[in-house]
Image (tube, rainbow, N blue to C red; front, side, top):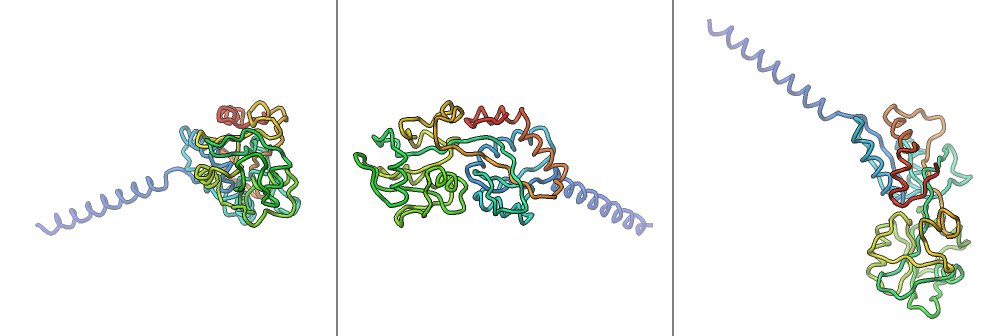
Length: 266
């Protein structure tokens, strides 16, 4: 009479275990995944948009920070849902298309204790191209971005730097690296996204025009470029990715973009 009880007990244990495993698996897969990759300049605002969107949608958005070049190649190679670039797309970058998320300035930065308040285009160009110190200032060194950076591409195009940087110019991988380098140097000039400015460094004027929201939106400040969402031609986004894309392009998201110091395109 005891054997049936043992068998029934074992069956019940297996059923409970299976139900528990099913529930656990369901929790682990909760929410569809969206992958966005690319520019370290675009990443901060994309992270804010993703966090806001996740509050009301059952979706997991992963933002992989790298560079504009990596975001573009990831999109071409179908390694993300869409990419981020802090510059416009080039003619040779095929199989993809770009949609402007917002506009941004490129701020010239120095150590917050540096006395320099203004530099000229000619002096900045000579500093990066030839390593020429800026006369009458303590600035003798330049800090830039590596070749895959969209910020570098836009910066070089706007200043007409066509032959690369001088050998002693530091070319760093990410926006945060440039900020940290400037914080630790009393005689260096660097450049970063206007939207990434912090009180840890100081932005200087270019040809007596300050890098401010008003001057960027009016076009008075010369160093500005688009933030671009990169899409693979012919690719149908998943429902989750399409929903997030529609959101970041909406007026609701543009209000968040504007509140964080970027220039809305709506």
